[in-house]
Length: 335
Ligand code: SF4
Ligand code: MG
Image 1 (cartoon, rainbow, N blue to C red):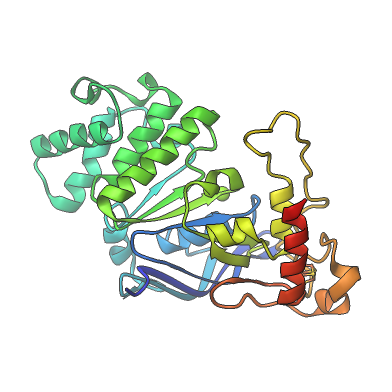
Image 2: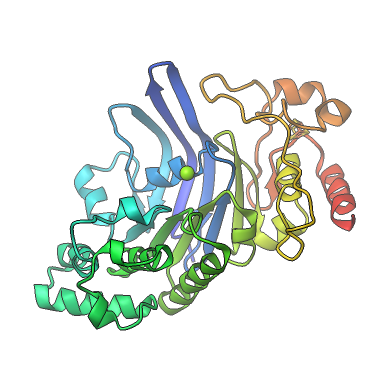
């Protein structure tokens, strides 16, 4: 089947007081029907910015978007607001990290779940309320008929996240964009929420984009993985390929700084030295070169002057030859 979402050469530029920020630069990816794409990267890598562009959520006065976004056969770049409006909460829905800001404190959860349903289906108040109860039940809220008239503050953090998922899924969207959906939760609740998303996906066949800075979160949740750095995609593959034999030095760094779940206590973290570059004035060549341990050793001058491209399909945007990438990757995973 054709990809449900196809993004080609996406660029997002923000005009700020200090100049133009290239938040996303030349990004291409596909999301297949029924599959989950993980997008990982540090904060400021462009992962949220890219997915918000799919929904047309950037302020057009300060944002310049280039490239192509095609969703279910429909071109979205430059589409009028009325088209995007019909899409949001209907074909495409979002779950955010912070349920306290995403949910209104002034309305019952039932009303907030019912509202997008009424808006997109024209259902009656009564039917929408029944639908809200059904959704609360689907996301695992006990005694949903008794909770439907409660307010967000009457729920725990994990339960509020479930409510937000109910709200996002109420119109049976074909694509769910989940931006750090579990970051604010403790580890046990995180796992429950991720399981819930997977279960619901199996029932509905929808596609998911899961945005996170946490490789531990993607390992058990996603099918395909895109690693972003400084507004660019630096590695892509199935989750097994990328986590099993990572090829980009940045991914090696990310994996090295990931606590292993079983030994989180005694295994020290090795954060990648240095900080991501300013997107006001990104470095020439490979954006990772100021932090890359392999710059001088192998690829040298090319890293500092020539921008490595990410190939289609499995691969990494890096001047180290594929052979070299595989060898170093093998040495690292054996350790
Ligand atoms: Fe490192 Fe060079 Fe590869 Fe960039 S292109 S990640 S600087 S080796
Ligand atoms: Mg973000």
